Image (cartoon, rainbow, N blue to C red; front, side, top):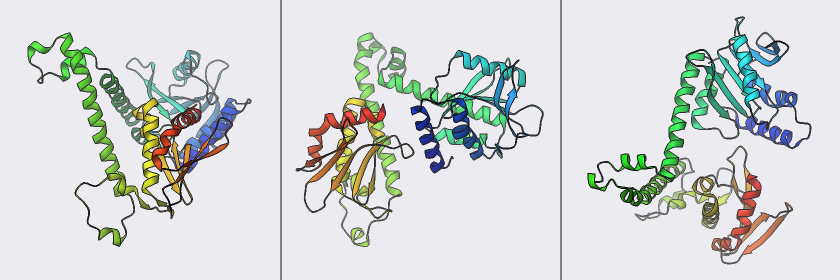
Amino acid sequence: MIDEGKLAQWLKHAENLEKSKETNEEATKMSLVMPFFAELGYNVFNPNEFAPEVSGYKSEKLDYAIYRGDDVPSIIIEVKAVGVKFNNKHLEQVERYFAKLKPEIAILTDGLIYKIFGRDDKSNLIEKYRLNLTHLRKEDEVVINLLKKDNFDADKLLNTMAYASEVQLIVEKLKRELQNPSDWFVTNLMEGIWDVQRSTKRAKDEARPKIKEAWEILQNDIRIKLKTQLFKNLDKMDESDEEMEVPIEVDPDDALVGEQENGAYTTRAEIKSWRIVQDIIRGEFGEEAALEVLYQDYKGHFVIYTGGQVRAKRICEIKDYDTSIQLDLTIKNAQDEDEIFELHHGPTDLLQYTDKIRERYRCVMA
């Protein structure tokens, strides 16, 4: 996978470029696209391998073409300024280059989003995959690995992308159906549960909330499995803790409490605060948004954030004095200034600041 430090640096460059009034393709090429392909093992300063400004169609110039010892490029790359919304004009441009240069793979990118194209059965351009560096998925790791210079295999890459894309389409369809079950989905899912006489509109309407509830149970089971996997990676308990008698029913959050690798000590109050913030976000923005609310414990402050480890965006910060029940909540206001609130009764006092927490979440996600 891509080095997280480098990825974080690219995302920071992209953020600065998007804020700049002078955002252009050249800046995107130099600070985002060339470093990305250099990370994949290509010599971006060798024009025989990573050729810039290649004659494309009539007077048009293709941004880059990657050659692997042949006269025909293996990959062609058309770059647009970061943040630009791709449109039909951009796609038609790539189609012209693709038809003339006849590469195996074509890429249209703004430095963060990589739309990867191949050929259909009639040798026409067709989108095969969409890679988003701001939100990398598990299947992206395989695609990125096959794009590397030492691993590049066009047929294998195209087959892998087709498989991963179909899996993602299935996931999206399942999400839609489980959140708002169609008649077809209800009928097929309930087959073997209903008797024949119950397959009526009324029966389907009665089944929908049951399906949604079953989906919630399944999601909870998945969260427990993920949490269990997380626990395996945490430091072992102190010998004194190991000697304690463990009750049959254990709060899984207890496994998150204790000393971390960086020397910080995570308290139960901090974990409970994180859970409450997750619930506050869940109440307005939904389950997926809540699951992306994570925490990082540093010595002296406990940060609750969203956006993943690479592009973390702070929602708030908790200070646990460990000598009393009181906590401090630090959250930025509309002027991006820190405001500190005393939680005299512990984590549950966070509920008094629900509106502020949700407003801060909207702000960092904007």
